Structure formats: C-alpha cells, structure tokens
Amino acid sequence: MPLGLQFPVPQPNLSAVHAQTSGSMLYIPDIAPLPSRDELRALLAETVRQTTATAPHLKVWFDLIDADTQGKRPIEKFARWYPLQHYVRVIYARHADSLCDRQGAVAKAVGSFLELTEDQLRIDLREIRSRLGENWFRRNPAASAADQ
Image (cartoon, rainbow, N blue to C red; front, side):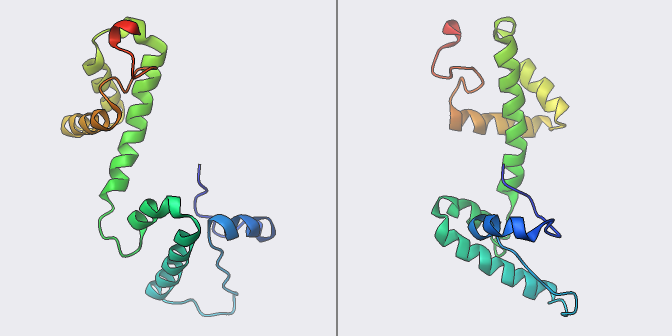
C-alpha cells in the first residue's frame, strides 16, 4: 500500500531514504516566503516527471495523476471497482455453496452497501467481467460453476 501524503514529514531523517526512492521531499524554511499555488504545483509536478524515469512501471499511473491531466474519472472508477470486487469475492469465498446462481442478488446487496446506483453497479460489473472473465468472483475463475 503506497504511503499517502506526509505533511509535515514526521521524522525527516528516517524518511529521506524512502523519499529519494519513491517520492519527493520538500523543505521550506519557516522564514522563506511560500511560493504561489501554481508555482508550487509546477515544482511538484516536475519532480513526479523525474520519478517516471526511475519507475517506468508506474508510467501509466503517473500519466493519469499528472497535473496537466484534466480528467481524473478513471481514479473514481477504480476507487469504486476495488471495494465492489473485493466484497463480492469475499462473500463467494465464504459462501459459494449456498449462493448458486445468486450473482445478481449478491451484487445488488454489495452495491447497496457501497451506495452505488443501479446504473453504476451494472456498468461497473460489466467492465469488471470484461476484464477479469465471466467467473471473476470465484476462487478459481478458470473453473466452471459446476466445478466450484
């Protein structure tokens, strides 16, 4: 799980190594004037661009969160998908025997718990299914329902 923002950095001497390999540290002395919001944002965006060169496997993510990227909708979508697929998989991992042919009811219950609209739930489940396969919610997605 990636670290979130650390402000102020709780212990800079312990965080320096981590910051050099997976983030950026910003030090502004108390007596220095603060840069404008746009100037600060540009400085931080430039450090992320430099990190892209050292972490090419994160390029798609960096492109998504780039300061110049106007549309952040994929982040919202993935934020909905993760708990949705997680809860459905946990329910099936624990209760698969008693849930034969009840995918719709399980999905509606989880969607209601997550406060998703019916349209969001339908679209999200369709996209998850298209990416992970028809039996994505089962322990062994490659196995048929009869084998479970």
